Structures are given as structure tokens and as C-alpha cells.
Image 1 (cartoon, rainbow, N blue to C red):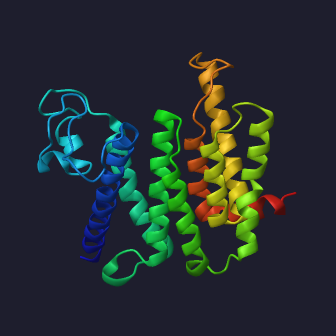
Image 2: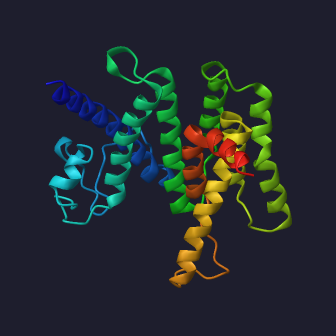
Length: 260
């Protein structure tokens, strides 16, 4: 009986996270198009048909409809399902990591982590599509960083200030010397995230981002899908590194230093 109750609670939490990330899907699709993210019903990107409530159930509708629009039969991108699914997983993970608050929902730290992962998810997909990281996301992360001063007091102000400069300043210098080395959005992302995470975690994030981005580049070059002169969005790999570093960045740096 306890196992059934726990499983049901997990599904409820999963649904809550998937619903929030379903809205983030709207932001990912509409923001680059200049459309309102809060007004107007969701619609099929292929035929423009307004979607009904039955067609907007996170994760479920995608599977029931066979990954197709009921109106035109056009294929729905798997991205919508993956983002919603990630939201459900992130919600449960943040709760397990930081504990739950009243009514079994996320604690304040859990909400903080969930929101940061959500912002990084939007940054990753929008940058992948457009090679742009909008300043509003930098502002959001900056506000989270200020909130972290009270919510995570164990990391001091100097740790955060050094973190803001530790990666972003070298990136800026490289961008000035080598044209196209890094975009302004990437630099600002690491600056505000460095303030949020502190210097150890942001260094770990950059390392993970470089490793993942380098692996992707080698794979694409090997498959002749990318030439040496082509550029690609680095934001998704930075977002991946930042998401991992938020939870384990300090530990990764300490582990690395211990084996030197």
C-alpha cells in the first residue's frame, strides 16, 4: 500500500513538472517568433489548428496521438515530449535532492533548482535553433543569484563575485582576440551563472561544456555533417554543464584536486 501511494505521489509530482515545462515549450517555440507566450491558444505548427485540452496533456497526448497532429496528420517534433518528460524528472529529482515542503511539494531550495533547470532548458533549445540567448534569461538567472545569497548562505559573496569573472572574463578576452570564439550571450550566461554557482562550480560547468561540445564537434566532423569552418551553438553544452554543476560542481572540483 505504501509503495502504491509513493508511486502515485511520484506521478503527481511528475505531472506538475511536465505541466510547467509544457509552458516552457511554448516559450521555446514562440519567443524567437516574436509571439506572445501568455496570450493565444496553442496551435499545431504545421497547419495552425488550435489544439484542444485533450491534445495538450503533457507527454500523454503526444503518445496517444501517435506523434501526429489530429488535424493535418503532420508529425509532431519529439522535442515537445522530451522537454515535458524532462520537466517531470527534474521536479522529482529536485524534490529528492533538497527534500519536500508542505503538502509533499518542493521545498524553497527545490523550487529554486527546478526554475534554474527550466531556464537552462529554454536557453539550450532556443540557442540551438537561433544562436541567440536572450537577455531576459540572463536577468532571470541574475535574480536567482541574488536570491541565492539568502537561500544558500554557505557560499560567500566573494566566492560568487570570483565565480562571475572566473570563466566569463577569459571567454570575453578570447572573443576579442579570436572572432567568433564565443558569443555575447554565452559570456553573459557564464557571468550570471558564475555568481549563482560560485567559482568552483562554474569552472566545473565550463569543463563539462567544453568536453560535451568538443565531443559533439568531433562526432559531426567525423560524419561530415560539419566542416572546420562551420560554427555551432555552444549554449546547449554550457547549459548542460551548468545544470550538472549546480548539484555536483564543487564535489567534482574537490575530487579533481584530490587526485593531482
